[in-house]
Amino acid sequence: MKDLSYRTPESYLEAKDYSLQNPESFWAEIAKNFEWYSPWNKVLKYDFLKPEIKWFLGGKLNITENCLDRHLITHPDQTAIIFEPNDPKDKAQYITYKELHSRVCQAANMLKANGAKKGDRICLYMPMVPELAIAVLACARIGAIHSAVFAGFSATALAARINDAECSIVLTADGGYRGNKTTPLKEITDEALAHCTSVKRTIVLQHTGLKVQWNKMDLWWHDEIAKVNDDCAAEIMDSEDPLFILYTSGSTGKPKGMVHTCGGYMVYTAYSFQNVFQYQKGDVYWCTADIGWITGHSYIVYGPLAVGATTLMFEGVPSYPDFGRFWEVCAKHKVNQFYTAPTAIRALQKHPVTLVDKHDLSSLKVLGSVGEPINEEAWHWYDDHVGKNNCPIVDTWWQTETGGILISSLAGVTPQKPTYATLPMPGIQAVLLDNEGNEIESSAEGILAIKYPWPSIARTIWGDHERYKNVYFSAYPGYYFPGDGALRDGDGNYRITGRVDDVVIVSGHNLGTAPIENALNEHQLVVESAVVGFPHDVKGNALHAFVITNAAIDNPDILVAELRELVAKTIGPIAKPDRIQVVSGLPKTRSGKIMRRILRKLAAREYDNLGDVSTLLNPEVIEEIKQNS
Image 1 (cartoon, one colour):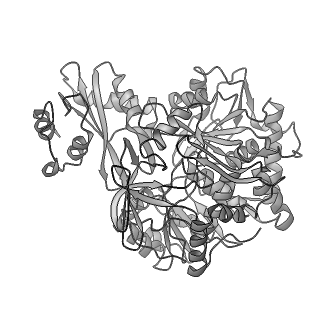
Image 2 (cartoon, one colour; image 1 turned 90 degrees about the horizontal axis):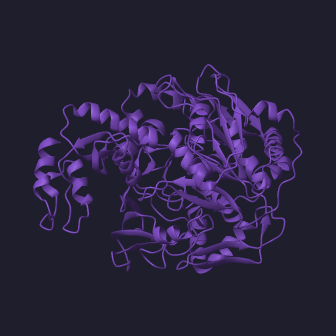
Image 3 (cartoon, rainbow, N blue to C red; image 1 turned 90 degrees about the vertical axis):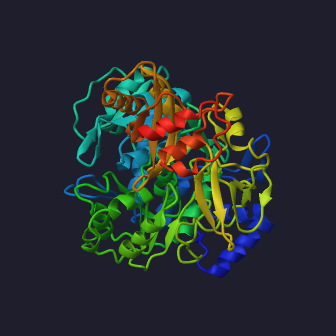
């Protein structure tokens, strides 16, 4: 495969100009570097008003042949996946491309033996172990649509995702490790499946040795794998066939199942991976995300494997057994590109720098940041202590919906600027809009939008195309609206200023406030609630919940504990509000709309900057909230 990277500023500028003048030819040239059973007959068909987007129409392929089979010819014995277990005393695993191909084909045959076929949805609720990556690729091998659910979600959240996609098989494990905790994944799956009717089989990986309850549709992974061989021809897929569904929080209660397709997603993830990180043959690349999130899909599995990279998977957490674990792993495996979240950087920054300095990090060439904008203090700590002022930092902006990185510097090729994602990738046409939807020229602050499709854009929301249209294409017709605001400087660099909708990014996770409010409102004492984000020095943002109760509360601490537990059970521990405040009312307009802008200011304790409150129905509640905060 040809190197897709722009290695010099000149080649980058040339590509950028060409992509603006000839976008279809630009993407067609990149797509020719992949293996296709038959070529496309049309590069792109799109209409942002419908919306309808199709790339490489008529092209036939299988993404796993591009991630695995073609590397068997050129470098079968190269390590594809390094697995670093939760406990540093346990041995790391090194899986070659040849072995990974064999294990993926075996797992694909295991799925087929249990009735899976092209178009079926398969839920993956698994720990961060090699078998999760293998399961992702096995589904793609046979044309089944995988729906990976982060193993920190509750049974209720898992059931909602299984039911929405009507999954027929669930792949899980007895349990998963996270630092010194063991999560009983099989137990949570059983609880979820009590509310699911579509599932016919549960295949369970033995990982922690936790005792599990056995049900009639349960099978052990190791028993099923032993029954099949590793000869599995790849299913021929259309470029626009669905590859996976991945759920993301929305500003209304129901999670959105974003649908990504085979051809365009493959092309864009490989292209963006190699360019942003400037990956070179023989490098060891580590993204610390979980495969349950889009970052793990695109930049642990598909992007790196499509270009024949060595990608590292880690089951643990940065704080176990101590806060030097990330740096120990970097030194142990001589990591060259390291990609993590600002939340992790801020948490590690609070601990002695000796935990960094005692490890040899001289192998590092590129540092990356993902999930939310990185603040300046964290950026400089990362640069000074981890990169030793010798590694470019790529501050990447993208979303579950975009499939891949849209705005970022290219490591060592384009200029970096602390706290700025910087420039759109070649092939990405980003703009700033005012509130009326007019494009703003030159340096300004406004609403970020994309005016032309790119290959990895999500095609729809599973089962609800109307919602897809309303959320992403209706606010500003003719543009993709990601829900973020941005600032652009005189050099065209973009700085993401935060969400402009009711989604809060907490520790890099997009959390819709509506599902959390719905969970709080389930409590018998809660009449109404409103959840907003406020700045947090480690998480970036944390959640503040304002709740109105139907009776006087003698012991607010008990209620707060019950509400936090209710949210954890309904959505997952990541969604628990840091603060819960009982109030007699919420600031509302005369039409009854909650003024979240004011609540955000109150939660941040920015009392001198509340703006116009003259239109409120009940301005007196502001003073009460301030007094009791």
